[in-house]
Image 1 (spheres, protein in one colour):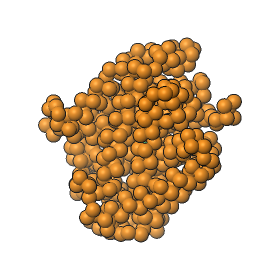
Image 2 (cartoon, rainbow, N blue to C red):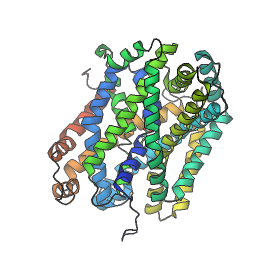
Image 3 (cartoon, rainbow, N blue to C red):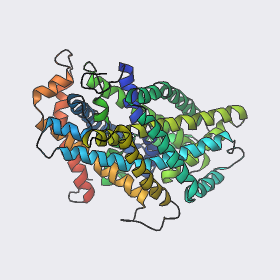
Length: 457
Ligand code: PHE
């Protein structure tokens, strides 16, 4: 325990793995391929990579600075660093974004549990691509099963959260992340060698810039923020548990590389396989779930035991990757209620879990029996996704960069990036330059382009 009674992450590796555990999740394996598929493939991916590098990594350093300096939850952090100002709203909106994301994310996380069950009972065997689509639609369209899994997923998250930060988060990240990475690598190799995979690879690598519109930019930027867990105080909350000697810029770089690596691998698994079995790349939120079972079937069909073991292992690891992300989302909300409203950690966690269960159930129903109820033409599930990933996170990122670039004292920023002058960080200047100018202006332009106030592309 530290003298101010806040726990710390134990080791350097723990810091990176916990942050990467938050970043790597359904965003990489489920959301990235479906957004890339909806937005035309390679050109989207290039813009996404640009957003990760130019906006994502510097803003991540910004979040780390705010979190480690204040050693508080994300709303409390702004109150400590900018007392008496309205900056606390950036933190509060971040908590709200986390709460909304956790609600609909749990639904998809719940699907992974259904698939663990399907893989374990060998139900992929003998099915065709069309069968997988039908089964999936019947499952998500039904009321009870997806609801049950979403609630179970939230309860598992709750259990880990109430066991405490260090033990729960760190231990679970350390073991499973490397295993997932290795398995993804194996699957990518299998997928690109499927018959007819070439067209999928072309889709990933050959950009068609004529399809790039304002909303492709917004989607790519939103995906970058979502995938890096950025813009809502998640990494800021984690950084409040960092130690004084954690190298912030290096940690941000490592997390960015790991996260992007997993997303690209997921792309190399999904698209070659989708084209190989004739699934449309713009199949939307079902894409990964209807494509992957084919990979297990086709690539390992000759060795049923291997197909069985790998598919079970894959869905278990996917569920765990989702879990390390739901833990981080939950932690943002729990730390906020616990520290700002002086609730016990248990009570704070219970409120978060309960609230997300209600919203999660509604999101789940909105894909099936409640399909007819839409707002702005979107189901509740899609609305939560749109509002959080495409508006709240990039908006949060814009304010974070303004806060660190303009509001915070330069010496404080330098002190944090260089750990009190003990590190020579060569990219200090570029980071500050991005936070001051590039990020706020860039995000603002992408926003107003989307609304149509400006027509650049
Ligand atoms: N980055 C996580 C993922 O890719 C999702 C997430 C978003 C987690 C925002 C925390 C905050 O799955």
